[in-house]
Image (cartoon, rainbow over all chains, first blue to last red):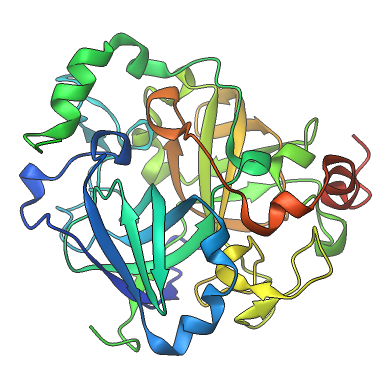
Length: 164
Length: 164
């Protein structure tokens, strides 16, 4: 395998949110409670949404289409200390793939209404997966540098001015 | 945005596991406890691994390089009932992107030793993110069709013959 191998993906839909400015967008769904929006799935993929409404939480996997150029060392939003990019959720990654777990509020045809949106308006959606008790709750023992960030600081920095 | 827009990604590394046959590979990390392996990051991206060792769990995002052709309706491994693909974690997705939360056991340079590997040997790795208490533990209320699958059945089907 070579690092110049290319793997192609295509949008399966688009995310509509109230976040138009990157610097004012909450950095994680946990800091975006009350922030609602929609994931609109293109009609050709709508058949794959069957049975999804039964899940309270879903993963959205998307393309950070407005990410700055990739960097290997970044300052995460939560802390003014330089960290390796893979130890952060920063957008400027070698592959700018975003991952958010949002609450699925309602489905109307090929439109998913969600809460906890920390994603910029117009973001191309790549995949949806269910987030479930059986698969996704892990017994975390160490949170790396995040253990140095107290919850109050995290909430203030995480919301980045978002009102809720 | 058009559905024929193309977004390209490149491997940042490769996953080495003991799973060479798809039909014998556990379907999720929770059914692959004791299954160790390595994620080898290509040297050009190794600088981004700084600070990662402090986290007990990490997301691996990868390319399902041996996935069958995409389908919108699939039978999930846990149940003999047809479901919309986005309500499952099946590999044959419109964008064959895989997501696993594994335990990070040890780092040696650009090699990550992990436990809970449910990934085929030779799989191209696209991204690594920390899985943390602050960001990734959500209050699941409904698990859709998975709520119909009892834990014993899930464990037997999930392991697919894997010994642990």
